[in-house]
Length: 409
Image (tube, rainbow, N blue to C red; front, side):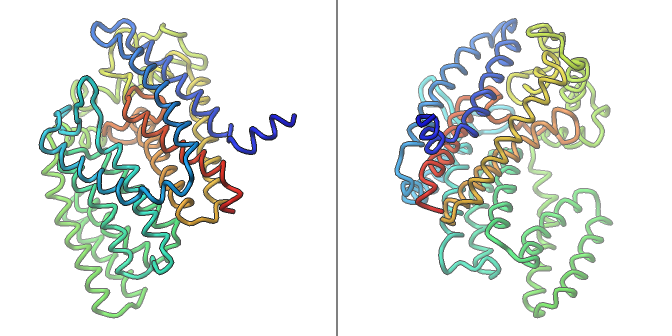
């Protein structure tokens, strides 16, 4: 009993066990979905090797002095920006986006590393003693730190990863304690931009709403005018951004509105994923017995659509187990972040949690057809070495904070 107490006092099994189970489930699904594939049967072995490497990364990160993460914040952020610039020049193009860098036989996405750098840099700035998140200057500077890598990622272009970064930025600012007006300033340009995509009437209506809100907040006319101009510019920028997307990304957004508009093209994956999950029933068809999975109806389902493999072969029960494991993990991380009195560490943990949650929500949402297909993997489950290594590094930071929580509570 004494040994168990010491273990739980220094090592949080509440985050380690759920993630270990998710990785095991992912390996099982990857094996099933690639076993009969003519060219991808080696993916299971590669993912197994990356899984072992990721646990090594986890324990190394867990063992570091906690103040290491604050020390490496700026260098990590700057290096991640450099990699994002380099990939635009010499990166490998995959699915219409120049987002991969190859080092010998291995490839990785700099945007994955950029998540770590951006979280640490924003957490460092927001945790400064003289930072006032309700001041226009600090809001602007905080957004600049987060949006600079977003702009570089959009140039690849990678809309899915950009959305993860934007969600992470907003959650970090919210956790810092932004006021209602500050939250309005941050969120309103995004709302206007989205409304502009639906047509001119929606765009004008959103601008009228912005004017009403500014009158209700009763700020000075110069400041209110600046906010309105920002919203106006975001609406015009949205159209340009949509036109800058690659044709297949535009089709994915269109097929989200109506998947049957292009059932053999952009809407194909969504329709087939629904069929796979729906045909699984309560207990599933059994390991390696799914028709959609084994007959390769869904392209590359070991990556973004791996959840439909679980739904078809392990049914509703298997799908719910995955969701529960994620929910337990999220609540555990939130508890550690809320109990950590060091603001930098608390913000860092919330930034990591936001990345996990956004990936989780978008991936599950696009598989079941309630969100557009934008190429977002399911953390710890989907095939992908660089993604798994980064996710386990971030989990190591969480475990490290837990290990040293008595020094920061």
